[in-house]
Length: 493
Image (cartoon, rainbow, N blue to C red; front, top):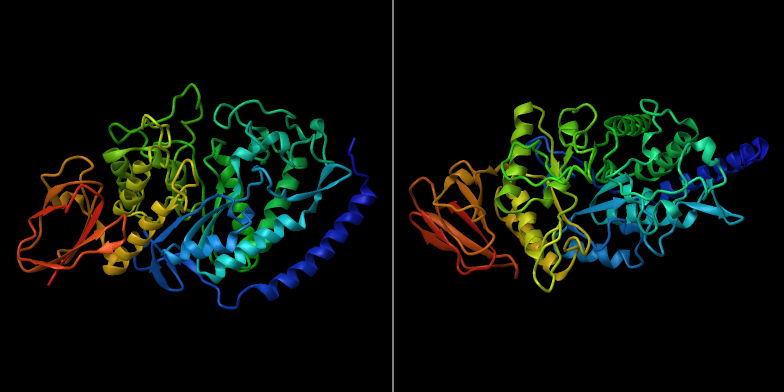
């Protein structure tokens, strides 16, 4: 039996519509007139541009659902102050103290009554990031809100025991999820017509996505991602990609959409030594793969390879480079994003968990850029550096580097480095005119360049300081000043 009678449902729906229209008019007045516009850079579609200028998206933050934190303005200002311009936004509400997207009536959630506090926070986040020219990547479905985790399915508004809008029988959704997001799939992620065609739940899912879009489509600094590291069938993401794009086109908007997969290996086993999760605990790896995104350019406008950032050392670089080269071979070049850079944990015995050590996180941040990727963002602690003092120096130094060279005409060129050991150094080059080399630690390599007078400048990453320039007649052997992390810029005089 439906829990709400039809008449009451209609009255509530009409009231909600009237309130929504009034809210919409109010919000339109609050949207800043000068809107940053993010789109794929026409001069080099491996990268993004913002307000007509190419930009590398660089970021880090204390949380993934940043709109829920109390000191949002201060956090955004700190990011901008160190050169950051990129953030992740999961529509998550599972952390302690988070607002839920819907209100309770008589102690139970009503999915026809949006929670004004939740949506006001989201609205403020959109406005404040817009004002600061920060590009945000929204993930519509925060996967772990729907599984066995603190604040997860047991407290989720869509769980049939938690709302007044459908019963367990009507929804065909379980009341209890006692497994991980990797081991089994919550039927919540199988509601689309191509899988289970679960209309009672799908209609409320569409209402939730529509509510997000009613705010986000007023802005032009937003990228869209369907899920967080999903293992769902590809038809799920395909449905929502088409749905969101159709909604955007109805408002005359061009938007950019991707999907994020759980599989750590984006290469399909084509890079020797690549890490992958165990099949026993991750039985869906065969379908949870970046290939789904690369091979569907009509659905997905850019590629997110965040889970490649569980790889280490030289293999991490080769995997990141493999994806870029794969993209180039398809002839349909799109940006490659890393909205999560893992690695930020230190244990007493200095061992690693799956996310990696603090040094892994620092190195991955740079290797992705030197593999020609379009965005890097430190994941939240404890699985990443967030916006810690260490992260701040890396963000600042990365921006200092990209501002000092013709970055968007450069391409990965580590093959120009001879006498190079694995993970010793990585190179970007623009023809034979300009080079940048990243050293994760002490190193010495031979750079193949045209003969002539060159200028060389060292950037100390952890202090964000340039050394004085040096003139060199033949920059054949390049050796780091010490065993710390360095980037060197080399250009023809």
